Length: 51
Image (cartoon, rainbow, N blue to C red; front, side, top):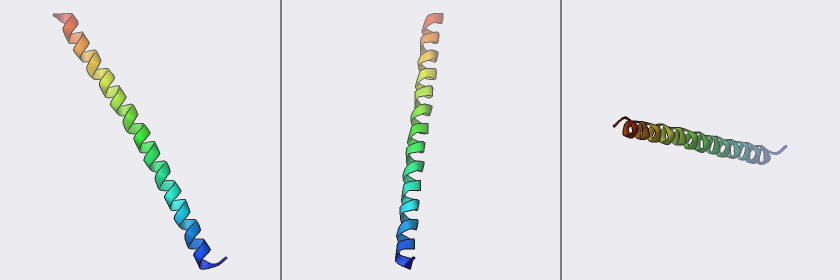
């Protein structure tokens, strides 16, 4: 296999790996933000109910 083909293959693998990590990170951030919003909403509604 020529060196250029190996370099291209490695570059493709690294690029795909980076995209996968980015997608996973965005998914995780979205889930954490959703949980934080749910918790904050619950605290606000609970505080209003106590008055």
